[in-house]
Length: 41
Image 1: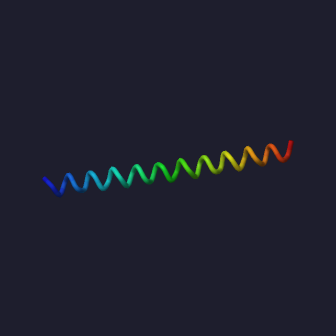
Image 2 (image 1 turned 90 degrees about the vertical axis):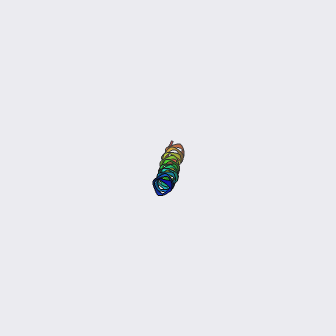
């Protein structure tokens, strides 16, 4: 039972870190596109 709980906790943390990394990448891409538009305008 403890092993299952440990696997669930580790998996949950991994998913949270993974989603945060993807979110940061998406925000960076959005900022780059916005800055490019401002420079082009």
